[in-house]
Length: 355
Image 1: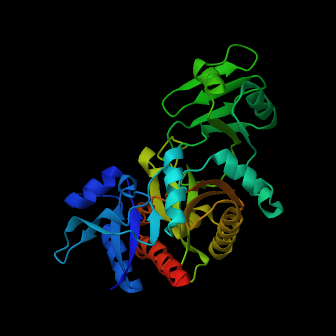
Image 2: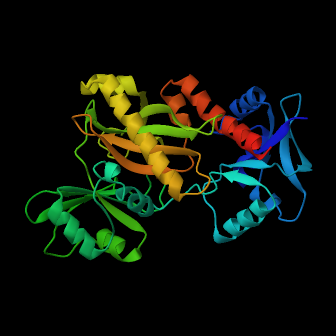
Image 3: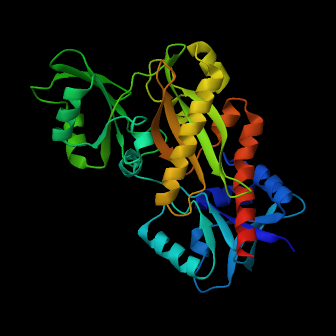
């Protein structure tokens, strides 16, 4: 009998798998990866994983490509694909691990400021990070004296939601752009209400906006899928460009961004493809290794990296639940497939280690 590997998913995704409805997760790739690495896969909800219980309700595939819900023994290895976890969830993880269950990517949502502080202490990474601070009125005043453009974003935000841009127009005048409207103001006068609110509500960071290279006039960044593989080693599965929609500064696909191959992006930027690709991979791997020392069970991340006009890579943020369909959108179908295969290969490695 094959070893079982669990994929921990949200209630919504669990229901869609059960009904064979469309999902952004390519379940067929998981199944193919299971065949390759000699494991059978099941799909779990955290509510069904009960400490002290030997069995768990799970969705398992049938021979007719359907899914049935049955009770099975708890898998020894589980890949977490939920977006976030509460304090209660973390306590449940702790109890389950004491029973011998191994989770990887146990945490999937990170504080951007926390990641920044972990990486800035590494001398090699310090020059690859934009100046970053928590949003307060005092911190904004400091940053506005130092930089010409700033980005304000939620510390725990996702998919480009709630991002604003500040641009210096003159010595005293700035413009606030929240993606829907622009408002000019004087730093010596009353600030826009939205900006004042951001200073008091908490949970936001302000970053220096690095002057980056553009793709046909649009802002872009690079998503690096960095994953542990069948050997338990970090490797860069793929790189894909994400360009902002016309007149926008957020590159997320959910906000109108478009995906392109790295080669196409670099062709327009007139940069040395091999040199830039190597520097992106080196930065991505170094970030993964540094974070691996700080974040338990880290194994599957998506890193956003910007490029200056000279091709110098700048780390932007780390995503613990990578939206892998960026590779599909760019036509990088084999890379898209491998983003599913490597986590299952790593699960196989974990099973082998426990044996």
